[in-house]
Length: 171
Image (cartoon, rainbow, N blue to C red; front, side, top):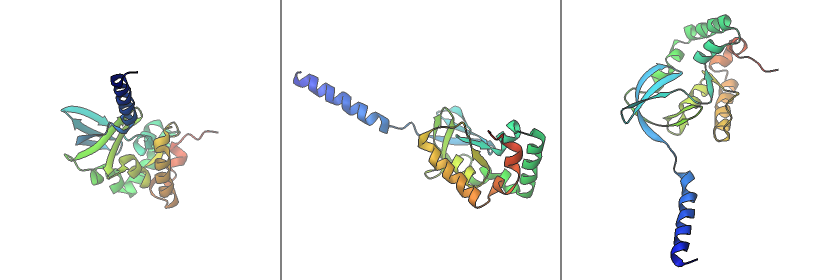
């Protein structure tokens, strides 16, 4: 190989080596908060729907619960006794503030508290469970650690029968 060919090959290897380091994390403006399970970001004048990744929120549990009536009743009872939990997103996310985010096929990774994602915040406060169908090695440990902390402290849904009525247990 000539000197120029060697330089080109080295350049290609260098580009391939640093390509995984370039993450697709962008900054979007939080434009609306529908609920704990749905937010909207603006990025370059495009609306980006942002649903927390890798988790099943209480709102999703009501829609897809094992016993829909009992699930809805349990969640409504929980929210009635903890009204600030229904407004969790509005209390912890600030409208018209810029947030780092990235979109993945399973949802939106919204970095709401430094390196902590919004999904981890919901799990840590017992407002969601890790989605059993979510399987990404990069995130599984962090999400399960946040959920385990809430379970240990009996936070949120872990202090109620929501899990019994809303989650279809695999046997």
